Length: 79
Image (tube, rainbow, N blue to C red; front, side, top):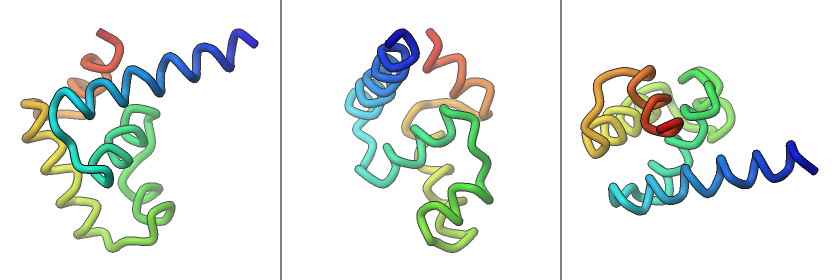
């Protein structure tokens, strides 16, 4: 039960950030995967898209969030 509520709170936090920063649905999906610690190779495989497409989504997410690193993304989610 505790793990489930923690997962729901995490998902809600990701959704709130995605909404606040006007991420597209696909950017929000990529953002949530990055927030869970997934790397670009995993995202590429999971979403069945090219490396360059993942790179573009990550670039757009970082730009919209005003961040420059994965650590900053994690700090934003945890904050």
